[in-house]
Amino acid sequence: MNNSPGVVIGLPVYNGQNYLKEAIESVLAQTFTDFQLVISDNASTDATEAICREYANQDARIIYHRQPVNIGCAPNFNFVFEQYGKSAPYFKWHAHDDLIAPEFLERCIALLDTHPEIAIANCRAVAINEQGAQIGTFDHEIRLSGRTPSERFWRCLWAGYFTEHFGLQRSGVLAQTRLYASFTGSDRNFAVELVLQGEVGYVEEYLYFRRDHPDCYCRIKDEAEKLAFFDPNIRRELWRLTGLIKMQAYLDAIMRFPLPLSERIRCLRMLAEWTLRRGIESATGAGEKFGDQFRREFAANRDWSDNAQSL
Image (tube, rainbow, N blue to C red; front, side, top):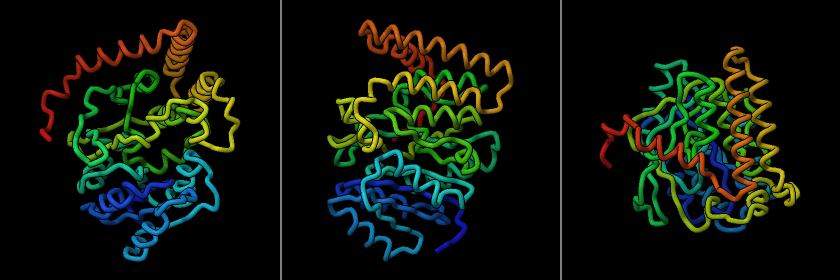
């Protein structure tokens, strides 16, 4: 086992037997081979443990850890970074049901190595179904990149679905965040803490494959159930306070990171507008009218799509 790998990949999983083998194989097929794959099994009750132990016995780069109880999605994500991720300059989370192309690490490392201002290297993403067939792309979604921290913050607030948190990240930048909190949608607050520290860069190739299937988190409708997915130890009725908790976490990030005064003020104004708009939309049942409009405008004006790579 390499004690000081170039990349640590954290794979948190719970009852992932249906797609886990494919996810692991896509990591092992990387053209960049100096990595360590850390699998944290959240006390699965299916064949996950057997699958993980089989691969760990075959490849010394794989570390398998089994949690004694289900600690929840957010604590399990945090565990793989806190316990193993700081040993390498770069870190990536990898979902048990997603895939990456063989060149993913190689291309993202090249981007990070040549652009020190970039905190996260991401790529174009493809949506796949249960069988692995392409069902779309994420080209229409808002990118989290921007020339200034406030521009990136604004995009994080109003983006729809984003995949940047599954990109390759600088471990030093990641260590300055509070990682995933135990409330629904904390991945967005985590993304804010990353982009306030640095830019997001993109490899203009389709190297990430996000799977949509009946058991994925995005299909959960009940808010209390979503909260339990993030952390089963949190009282389910607290989902009603999620908006307030998220706003407070955004405010904390704005004040905690060393931003220029002008940028801090811009971010505070943006947060005030977000809080007002989301509060009105929530009270009136208008959905996400402003966010939907912003996302449509972005999709209609994305000049970077003109040279899109064919799939």
